[in-house]
Length: 220
Image (cartoon, rainbow, N blue to C red; front, top):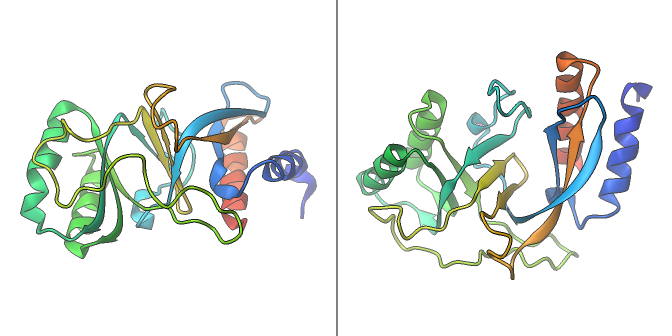
């Protein structure tokens, strides 16, 4: 291994020793040159359903490779997202009109709905993503088998009754929801560690971010 990222390897080793598993480690682009570590409270779920959601940056306000960010997402938690596509259209249109985003959290999804969400995400007609329901990792006993609100049986026609987060960060191995209020979801909230990655310049910072994301996702 090259010594080029020895500082990051040292930080990752310290962070990894302080968290239950890699789902609790995230990274962002630092505003300055230095790399720092902080903690923030969030709700940890499973990872993205498709690699099509995970691009190599491109958003001026979110330059973390292979990680999607949703602002003020409305959250649909449904065991099987297999209802016919026309049943989802009113909800998707309402959320797009409100300028919010949509996160579907499910154990099963139809190919038609998944493809529709992917296309809307790529075309930016709706800020949206699909994530998996979190399951416990063997040996950790983490309270991640559910969410602090009820599962719906079918997509609602409006978003008014749906829970909403301030932000959602999604990658291949996990999702973290940050609540709008510190007291929300108190029984299910966890501390997550956020590494703010600096660099000598923008290109160097992007290379270092890629290294951190890839390393985190290789942890078991």
